[in-house]
Image (cartoon, rainbow, N blue to C red):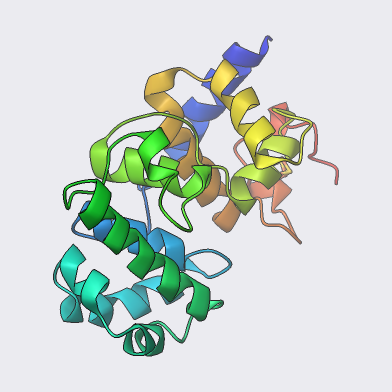
Length: 210
Ligand code: SF4
């Protein structure tokens, strides 16, 4: 089976297995998704959602983040890793959005990458989750692990993995592929103890004996 057919098979099996797969971060606006995604680096989505619930109640607009007292903002997110930098990046992004992008989160990869703390993964999540635009595939630790275990890539570098996945996946499925691999990685194909016997991909997985 060629790569594209295999990928289609994987997608169809995972879709049946995880019909609930979607972004786990809570947000109401593109900027809230940006803030949640920045906070999610090296932190679980569950922890981020706990922090953003009161955060989003307190800061009701992009201007509120831009004008916030930075120490107060740091304190508001202090239960996540690297909160100092994350708070600075959230405020820096808010300020740049107001100054350069007319107060609206930009909707292109090129512009999003100008924002502090926003790299390709974050930009892909914002584009897909907030704007419904498939510009690339968000590669996090789960996507990285599963793409390698499933033999969809031989790379460890997220940018190269993303390129490999984009070549074999129909564009309309780019966002879904990321969610499905993340769900499967959390529930079945876990880093330390993958549950091979429970896996719907067992018969087509080159790593079923690891
Ligand atoms: S068979 Fe095992 S290694 Fe392969 S995807 Fe399933 S859980 Fe992961």
